[in-house]
Structures are given as structure tokens and as C-alpha cells.
Length: 139
Image (cartoon, rainbow, N blue to C red; front, top):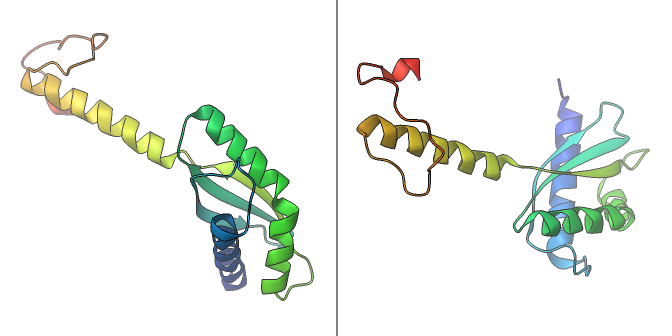
């Protein structure tokens, strides 16, 4: 469970990193990056920054590497903002929430189309419906 102090520090770190990504980081690898959330360890020495990157897998990897290389610069910005004994060490992880949401949407659309008896365009590997008396609860 996060304490109030951890939550305040996480929000301050999120604001600093998001602002720096937009205005201060000049690394061309860091493009189309959105800071989603920050998790701070209980001892306030480490912070995991969850980011979303628009683009293909190679662009996502390049952006994460660019952010890791900019971690020292971002930590100095955070040190100016936070009044703590230790400045958290930043690690960046890719948030795949948007991709997962799109995959779930596609699966639900395919199931809905199969239930109505209409095949969805582009889904040739979908199994045929098993029986007409099958209910949606059994799917």
C-alpha cells in the first residue's frame, strides 16, 4: 500500500518527467512518448516510470533506450523539484495497455459477428460456430 508521501512524490515525478519529455529532451529517439504513471518504492530510492509510445516495436525500443540514456538529466530535474534525502533512480517500462485494449476490442467484435452469423472481414482463421443452440455464456 502506498503512503500519501509516496503518492505525492510519484505525481511530482510524473509531472517533471512528462514536462521534460515534451520540452527539454532533445534526443531524436524520444518521440511520441506519453508518461502514464509512476510507481515509487517504499524507501523512495527507485521509481518506475510507465510510458506509452506510439509507433512500431523498433520505435518503442528506441524511445525506451533514449529515455534510459536521459535518466540522469531527468533525475537532476526531479532533485530540483523534490525535497528528499535521495533522488529516486528512474527506470522506464513500456505500458501496453492501449495495445491490449485494441486486441480485446477486436476479439469482442469477432465474437459479436460470429454470434450474429456474419463473418468479420480479414478473420479467416476464426473457428466456425459450434452449434446454433450455444449460448453466449458458454463462449
